[in-house]
Image 1 (spheres, rainbow, N blue to C red):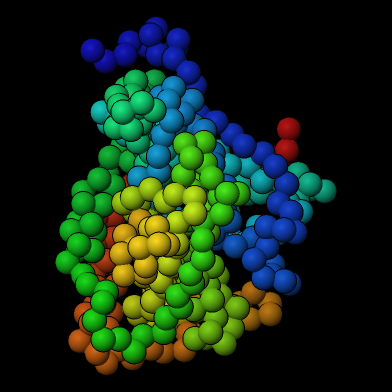
Image 2 (image 1 turned 90 degrees about the horizontal axis):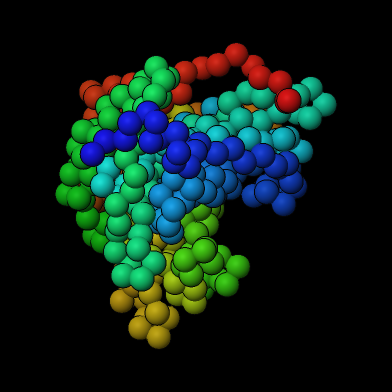
Length: 336
């Protein structure tokens, strides 16, 4: 039975805002003008997790992060706001719209730096299986608009996932590549005993940034992530392999595919299981933060050629479906 407005008033809030200061330790590279995309995604994951748990009343896991637009850098020292709110719910899933804003505390004017959609799934702490969540019923015109925007992404997400499932990544390749291996540390643990989804996304950005910087010879920044999918939990003490591989270059952008694999180190690297997969676009910037032309990668092996075509297919799908915007651009907002 759907919630009546009266019943929904008694439920927990469908939104949450985290506010904090971006610190020098949030920078990935000394001298960078802004916080790395991976750290921003970690912030988003924490806020969206809090929103999901607040709504569902139980532990939740990250299932998907997508439509991530990085519009400008966030300098160290800025006040940061991460705003997360429920857009729609399924049986056990919560689609959460997230907006990251920042302001120089001396000026107090917040402007947007990033927005994205995150899907969390509510879990039963005893059975470790998904459990139903209270249905979200929009009450305002803006809530209805956001729900429609989230719904408009479902078919696109399915089409992209079908396209991604056709690909292989283990054939001969000459593509620029960066593989990082390490053990998941106790400091990476989340409230359910596994690695934070946000921490894993930061690993993705670190490997992809290193790969694109090595290839371009310039500092690079993440500008868009089309989809980050989580398949298996990562446990503390697991051997982690982050495999970042270039798929395609265009005039200014570099499209990266990044797999995170994990497993018991005693089992060896050949037994690691895919824990997550991400596709992220990067651009190179000069000392004044202006974008520069990308060094071109020409695929030659059969798999490299196919993955370059795959990257273009993903772009074409996003143009074909043209989902409604999650966020309506607001005017600048002052610190209250």
